[in-house]
Length: 147
Image (tube, rainbow, N blue to C red; front, top):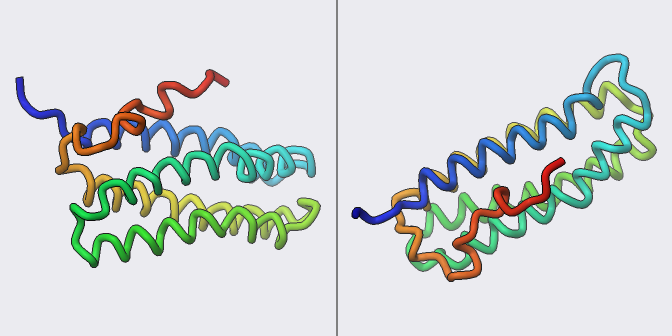
């Protein structure tokens, strides 16, 4: 039996995360979406999304010594963006009355998340799963409650 690498696991988790985010934000980005749809999307961005970001950043921190400085810098910058963007979005949109701006900003957040996912898969993917501390070896999204 060969060594299990992180890339397949990361790819599965990231695909599920991107789908989850699309499910949470998609309805709010529709032209006919109302304030409540955007409010629900903001709730996702204020609760579930930061938990996912923190878990991923914790994984990167745990493996940082195995990365080149350029990889650490790229992941740090993307991680900071993912942490700050939801708070910025909530303040910018206020009570969710700016539908057009909401769609544009959440689109940018989706691009940032996609870039984060690709960077993590590229930089951490070649490492063995056993490089992770035991508490981080369990796939997060598999353990998340069904919606």
